[in-house]
Image (cartoon, rainbow, N blue to C red):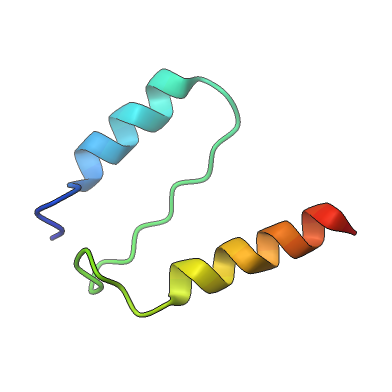
Amino acid sequence: MDQASPSSTVDAAANHYGDDVAVVEYPFNEHVGDGLQWRRQAEWLSALLR
């Protein structure tokens, strides 16, 4: 589990935001990650700008 940003705090922030959000958990990435989130953001932005 990510000790810096536990999933419960991320879920609470997303619920408080109240708009359309997507929360994706990467259970084995800890806080550092491996670039997967960056790639997902780049794909999202690419699709948005089409």
